[in-house]
Amino acid sequence: LCDYMKPNTSTIEDVKITYNGQPVIRSGGSSKTFKADSEYIMNLWQLELLSIQKDYVSLSFNGNTCKVKCEQNDMLVGTTFTLKCQDNNDHYGKLIITIGSGV
Image (cartoon, rainbow, N blue to C red):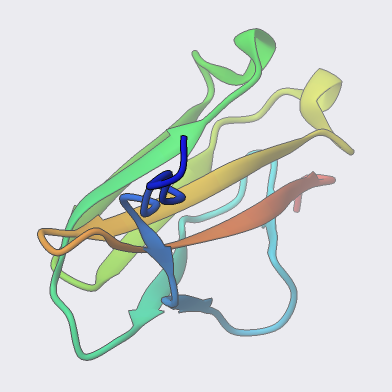
């Protein structure tokens, strides 16, 4: 116990995810672009969705940019989910996104 050292965390949350306007996507609207503001190249983007959102919210990405879209479903308005990105060196970012009312 004398030599106990606190283990290092394996990831570093230092990537800011940027976007235009508010962190809101519209139910039934066009996709919204999000960007990892980082010198690192993101190789993984993922969504942490509620079970009710899984068939309606989609993600596509290329490097440090991703697009998130929500198909029309009024039951999802007001719910939130988390967008995450990570690079090969365990730098990551996350953002909570709200689903807003349709267009």
